[in-house]
Amino acid sequence: MVRLNLLAALQFLTRVPIRLRREPSLPAAAPWFPMAGAIIGFAVGAVAAGMWHLVTPMVAAAVAIVVGLLITGAFHEDGLADIADAFGGGWTVERRREIMKDPRHGTYGVAALVSTVAVRIVALGSLPGPAVMFAAAVSAHVIGRASAVGLMLAGPTARHDGLGADYTRLLRRGTAVVGIAVGLAVTALAIGWWVAPVAAVGVVGAATVLVLARRKIGGISGDVLGACEQVVECTTLITIVALAGRHVLWWP
Image (cartoon, rainbow, N blue to C red; front, top):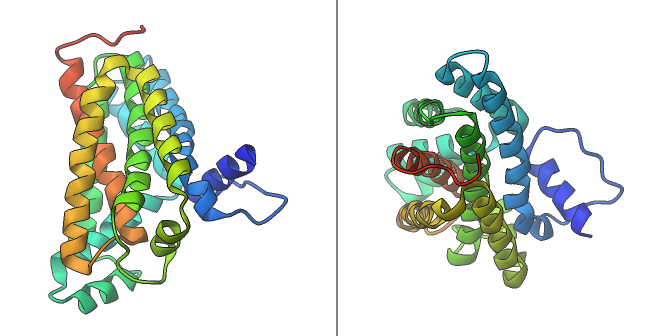
């Protein structure tokens, strides 16, 4: 069952062609999102660390971020863009929900997409060495997805249909908490005591997204979860840049 849920999480969050023998339960797979993030982050970090020896750090970071986008199919980025368009351009709750359903992206959405990619490239490329780049990529992807799971536990749904509502309604609280705890343990293994400030900043980022979502559309949705992952992934990388400038990573 554990293997099935992890594979289901990877199937849902990535474009990796994973075939399962039976239909997975997405609410059961949701607590495994942080571990799926660890696998994605491992791939991104490995590319960044490997290319650091061949090209400049910024180029290595850019290629690694693009690899991450290819693996995930820009899944969370699409949610961020939808939220940016809806929250920036909608004047009523109903209009914001209509904008979120529109597959096209407007100025706010495009600006959000460009911003998140730019921040991640610059932050990852600013880190002092391949080991820190690898650890940062793993941590950012784990904490980003752990924050989305936490948001499912903390926030009301914005509507009674959609993936966000399904996850929140059927998610088992105990299993979700364990999934978040495992994600934090993996992050601690990657960056040591840095996990404390990284997690704290992640909580602030997720809480900010939740407050905006409740004010703008009444609660969380699938797009809000994607936006939360992106915000926290960026804040995690920025926090690690600040820490790496003053402290040494514990394991190199």
